[in-house]
Amino acid sequence: MNVARLVGTTLAGLGAEAVFGVVGSGNFEVTNALRSAGVAFTAARHEGGAATMADAYARVSGKLALVSVHQGCGLTNALTGIGEAAKSRTPLLVLAADTAGSAVRSNFRVDQDAAVTAVGAVAERVHSAESASADILRAYRKAVHERRTVVLNLPLDVQAQQVVEEHEVTRPVPPLPVRPHPSAVAELAGVLAEAERPVFVAGRGALAAGGELAGLAAKCGALLATSAVANGLFTEDPWSLGISGGFASPLAVELISGADLVVGWGCALNMWTMRQGSLIGSGTKVAQIDDDASALGAHRPVDLGVVGDVALTARDVAAGARERAGYREPWIARRIAEHGRWRTESYVDLSSDERIDPRTLSIALDDLLPSERLVAVDSGNFMGYPSAYLSVPDEAGFCFTQAFQSIGLGLATAIGAALARPDRLPVAALGDGGALMAAAELETVARLGLPMVLVVYNDAAYGAEVHHFGEGADLGAVRFPDTDLAAVARGYGLSGITVRSVADLAGLRDWLDGARDRALLVDAKIASDGGSWWLAEAFKGH
Image 1: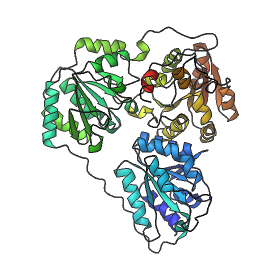
Image 2: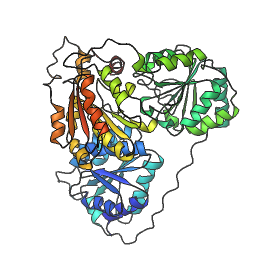
Image 3: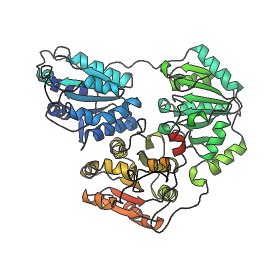
């Protein structure tokens, strides 16, 4: 057995189930070793798509995902997806072929360690046949146990080396979750006991602790909200305000900014989630709980920082907390029930004969699509509409690859998420710019036979730039001729419809009622909103 095959068999033995990639000569043998060991391989049409598919698969499944790329250009093509995963602390292991140590003049040669480190990933390397098993396990532990995106570089000469002695694959024992110090638990319990209007904001680090947080919130009278990436965590809770930050409903903004205590649970409390800090009143206390001490106060000052696992901390605090009504007044419950979602807000419909208001479109989609859905959202001026208007069943029903704020990741996100949860209808919400940027992966959707709905909010422009720079500027560089994306989809073997009104969504209804034997692209020609409500907030951070 050579090192290339050892990598594949070892990772399969460690429980890897899915690998995404584009195969070249440098990663051909590693990929086939994974496949022969039972790891399902999904061929993408671009390495950037492969990395984002794996990122989404890991987020939705909760399992380690692998990426396989060629040396040099294969890795650099994947860097945006790797950067997104790294900034999101997605447990991801990228297997990157690398040039041989002696190939100093190879055109494939780049400083791969420096490249991946630059976007926030961890660079690891298989150094020799003798160290290969230890090198693989080290990379695995960092990815899984430290929740990091790790790039394991595999030099071609090392891949070819023969392994003299094979080692039995033993999965490393994961570290115990961090238990908060009893004094920190007591201090947090005291702060909660004094609060009259507490609000919990749960983030990525709280995705496995929804039940514990809901229980503690009920005991101390707190309202519940999430960051965008944790959308859906409290879907069934009548005291949930939905997403905090730029996507927040007017009622959520009012109630969060009216809190006397905001507690961030596994949540960065960054400028997006706190609207540049405007959601925190001048007299509001702020507490933050995270198992990573460096995260505490990283984005804003906090009055109390607790190092600990979110679920354990919530459980320990609840054990000694006393029952309080807090923010949970009957009149607030009625307001949340009546105005807790954006779709209940009145608006002037901007639809015309040629274009549909994105709010009207989103409400109609929310009514038509089955509740067991999985929504993946790309970036752009449109992105608040599917995020805020399309309900999701739980935290596994929403996948938001937006840490890097790159457009063009939404389609690959939907593919990876769909493969992780085949029991749900995947819904990709894209802008026309992002859809065209990722169009090659439409072939992947068709080849895999994914029964997916792709909704393109098509304004024939890079809408964020159009609205940010204003009509007084020369916008020729960010406006484009209208593209018939439904025809493009049909060219790839998908179904496609054009939507200019709610009545045109009859084609979606027919597809939902039919065999769903191929994906459907909805080319929705949307009216200009003059700049979405969240866009002004977002650009304050640029």
